Length: 149
Image (cartoon, rainbow, N blue to C red; front, side):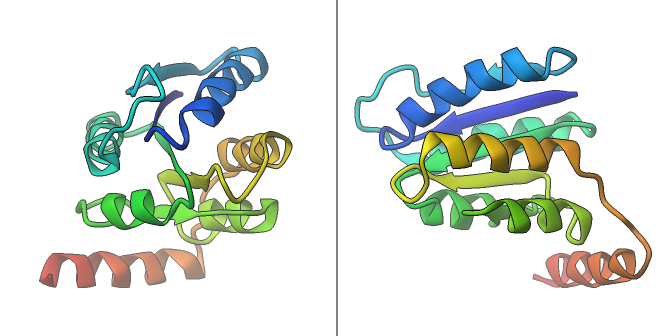
């Protein structure tokens, strides 16, 4: 599986560390760092769009976005048709975002959670799959709303 990851300047250090964590712990996955490549100030919507565009083109991939709180990246990502970005600050929500909502982008707040919690959230997000069943019909409703708007 391919994982596309990006941040803004506030999330740069966490992104850098998570790339290493994923490469070390998920050797069967490829990680693509979509930037930025320093902690200089940048505009997060541009990086959200880069990751989301790649996730939409690469159907069996996931995205990870990181900013200070995760809110800006989450709002930006969810403006893109076909993206289901979930802002997760704990393991439980990261698992259920995949199992119940078929989230394809994980969003983290680097000023909200530390590296240890972030690694567990990422691990669970990557390892969980969509359960389908009753959740599939709800996902179809979400897609219908997206089509109308």
